[in-house]
Structure formats: C-alpha cells, structure tokens
Length: 160
Image 1 (cartoon, one colour):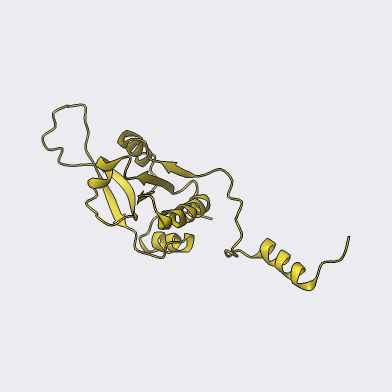
Image 2 (cartoon, one colour; image 1 turned 180 degrees about the vertical axis):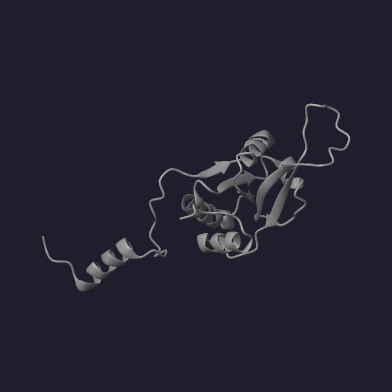
C-alpha cells in the first residue's frame, strides 16, 4: 500500500475534524423530519411542548436544498425542536390557512395555550388553543435556526 500524499492526508484530516460543511454528504442517520399527514397529528405534536418548525413546500429545485437543510437542522436540534415538512399540493387546506402565496416558506409554532375566549363552539368537546407563530426569515441553515432560536428565547438545546 503506497503512502498518501500530503494533500490526501490534509483532506482526510479536514473531513474528520471540521465541524463546518465541506461539501461531502454527512451521515445524519435516520430522518428526523416529520412528514405532515393530518392536522390532528400536527396538534398532537404541538402538545408535546416542543417548538415545531414547519416548512411549507412545493416541488422544485429550491425544495431539494431546503430538504437537506431541514434534515441537518433536525438532527442538530433533536429532541428539543421538531421539524415538519408539509407538501402543499397534497394538503392545500392546511397551507391556504397560512395565507402566503410564495413557496417554500418556514414558520415556527411554539407555546400552545388554551385560548381564554372559546367563542362559539358547535361541539362542547372541542377546545381551542392559541399558538405563537413566528415567520422564519434568517439564513436557511442550521446556524440560522440556532441564531433564530437564541434571538426569540426558544429553548433549542439541553441546558448544561
């Protein structure tokens, strides 16, 4: 077996020690991004008490990049922040309620509380909740999510 060149050793060292993205695929393990299937599942996820990052998407080249970013961020912030992807052509009702016309976009849902004013409710077994929703307008990367959570006081990692 021949000896590696200086360049090969340097690249190998860089890949093994660098914490920044070097252009090579990362082994992230199983996907931590939840695929939206119903509003009921979404509400149950909110009631677990963790912030939920929701990406509202349509098919396109930019969505492929967004998927990679979501996968990486979901692994980094697991289990304190949940990441969900909604394919708007499959679930138009849920996406239309967000009243946006440019896709993809990201919103962060957190702090569900029972609404003080229940209003007129047809079924007495239905309870209304209010949820804080923040539009995500930071850099689309794990770093951007980290800075966003820090800025808005969202607990994204375990206290040490």
